[in-house]
Length: 310
Image 1: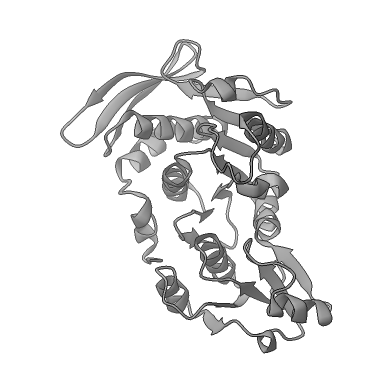
Image 2 (image 1 turned 30 degrees about the horizontal axis):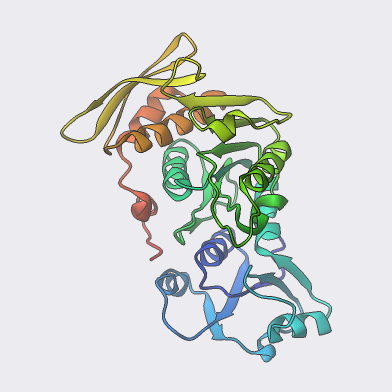
């Protein structure tokens, strides 16, 4: 990141854009942006961080800026036109995220369903054991100048995740979502395959998803789930008065008994994905157990850092 430039976000109130703006601000960058004047739930966090938000106008753009362009805005937008006239660098949202990916051990979370909850849990757990930046689709973002990890939500819509080259990727499921963009389920699978093949170290995929099972990729795939053929397996899942408990095995190796303050198998699966990532990063599983116990939900993920973004 260039600390000498102002990163100007066109469409800064979008959930992904606001989170990304907060990350850059946390890392010491100069940040400003523009959007519609109507109040949005992401606005409070931006204002609390001291980030100026202007109404859209071409005169907002001046020399010395780097433009971060929201996915919804084309070259006909007056601010993008002005930036081109001035010869400024114009980055897309995914290109800017990729700059963060390159600085850290990065974990992308992708899937038709469950991205936000899994990213939030991953961010919470990793933040408890090492400096961690994160970008969550609900508008939450936190930047750490010397972060070891970067946990981020990767959206498949219009192949927005095509620019990412993470160290690891978690894929929760594949479904024929966004029929306005994808032709069919094969087109969706092709997009997920592209992300997997750009992932450097390994893919963690839900083993009971038939489309994930059939992906043809060039990196190690670690399946997690509840079946015998899953590498990381949750068994003896029990509901308690406070949430759920379950045992985890990697093949025949017992990793331990885990407790989470959440109900439902999907939360067990999300936790299992996080446990698997931590295993390969050689994080003490006792620390993971402790952090899983203290998770309060996605919208509260920033409370441990003393700030809120909604």
